[in-house]
Length: 451
Image 1 (tube, rainbow, N blue to C red):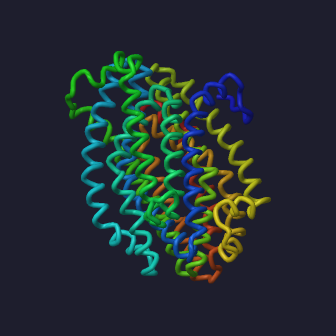
Image 2: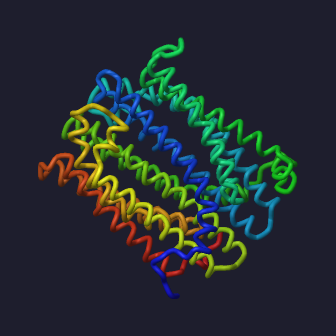
Image 3: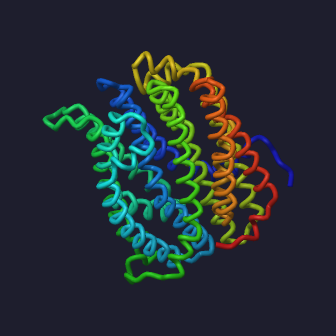
């Protein structure tokens, strides 16, 4: 197959039609993450608050991602059924996804609420950081049932190509999140001053509102009648097993990768609390790049699922390449901004001069590394849509835990290179991971897989 490095207009328009609303929605979440961090970064003892938020956020994600990957299983199955022309089958996937997500959300949310301190204390070497971070996690876990129900709805609308519904839900969620951040972190408009706990509660309020919006949309006639998800309130063991078959490898992958970033922050914490806070600021800045890439990944999964369901394997592969090209153009632009203007990016997040001084060289390293990440993320999503979820999981976990983290510890601690050394391990990991995904996708063996 002839490969053209430049995007093709006709194909790119279709990718962007699906990707743009997803990118906008995910980017709005990135904006909230930046605003969260920026507000917390203006509290007293900002270094402790930022380190606590970083650990609390990653620890929450590490647990939540075990179950949020059910969106991937829902998305992939709905896209495939939609491509086959089986709309009631797509609706049946949603119905079963809602059942398992709602049940798991109640169980895990309750456990997380009561054991927040014990979870974060595993990764923190500072008692003050653990205490502040547990307040944040506790309120995030209250919203877990709403979040997981929204995960099911999100996967369904991704799968039928209506990413604009997700965009509207994200706007509702994030506007409320920012407003209540301002109210609850600082105690404005008569609300109690909750500091880091307020950031967690604001996120839960936003997630709850987003979930009710999804619920409202599913009762719209144009969706409710053809997909018939509420017609018979029964569950199917076969559908649930199919969702888990796709979702579980993604869950393990997410847990190990987010757990790996917790370890990465802990390695920076060995160097110092300020270095740990600086690394958290840089990770927040990287959301500027990563969130839109996940949007391109959503487009790849939807288009590949539709075309594989319709038995058009050549088009499925073409759309995978096209999406990866568009994602790489984006990462190149963002990478240049990170390298040339790091101080302006970081000032959005924190004004703490000590943290800024440590973070500037780290963002330059991360900016150069993430240029190559677009290919890896997007083609990994493409392979997941085809059913190669176990391959993607193993590749990501091995490169992360055998390459990235040992190199980070070696450079930062053993060779005494500090945080710069830890971050120098990032390009090694990204280039290897992206190369593996590209090799696997080009091989074409995924075309024979079934979901």
